[in-house]
Image (cartoon, rainbow, N blue to C red):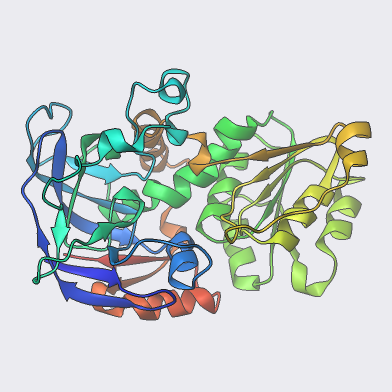
Amino acid sequence: MKAAVLNEIPGELDIEDISVDAPAPDEVLLRVVHAGLCHSDLHFMDAHWPYQLPAVMGHESAGVVQAVGENVAYVKPGDHVISCLSVFCGHCERCLTGRPNICANPSAVARPSGASPRLAKPDGTEVGQFARLGGFAEEMLIHQNAVVKIRDDMPLDRAALIGCGVTTGLGAVFKTARIEPGATVAVYGAGGIGLSAVQGARIAGAGRVISVDVENDKLETARQVGATDTVNASDGDPVEAIKEMTSGGVDYAFECIGLKQTCEQAWSSSRPGGTTVIVGMMPFGEKIEITGYEVFMLEKRLQGSMMGSNAFRVDMPRYVDMYLDGRLMLDEMISAHMPLEDINVGYEQMRQRVGTRTVIDFD
């Protein structure tokens, strides 16, 4: 099968022919139909995070089940599914206390030591799967706890977005922050995750939703999907603009980019007693600075959100329903479709902040 493989860091993706093994017990083989380009992969391609190579990249995919291994009863061939990097074991303390998105037992969903690799190059070299998925490939062989079954009437290019960006942004609002109706919200970043957070705030009944970005076209898209106000951060200090608009700051600020500067700006944009949620993936080892005074005297809160605090087998079918009944807007978030062979073009456009979400088409 064809796959986009990262062979060196920093580096671009190489389109290669690799082999995929048959499903072992608890494994599912998918035919990938669509995959979204997410900025998280770029962190590894551009050497902001380390990773063991070679590896098939990609983690935001949707497709159709081709075959299943022993012990798989949740899905069957022909089922439409979304994959998710929040692969859960189902029996560690975190899973059992409602936090499967930060499962503490990843070895439970991997092949045992000494087993044949799931993916390999023609010379037998094992090829890893980014985020335990490897979604930039014609097929994916993954643990059954990495997929969720969805309705057949859901378009799979829209479904792919739910696999990461949409679930991350919506979940940060719905599940991590649990905002109240009427709350004031600022969202830093109007990419796929930020636009999803804007929509989550709209759906949850926020009184005011302020989108912050440096690209006017992205801010216009943010208005289309639910932002009541926009701030172009290249025109001045966004913190001062937000404080002026809200008479002192927002109840909830969401950082959906992954930069030290914007994390600190989001923190400064929240009012006394407010909450700042860090959603974006920051470069490995990066630190942010906040004052102890604000934490102590003003009771401000800083909260992380990993993949929207999801329980994806419950959450993603609900997000599918939201799209199909018109509450969740996904069509507006897709700025381009392209074949796998053009994937490096798509990532270069992402570096240049062109578009919102690009989708790779395999069919």
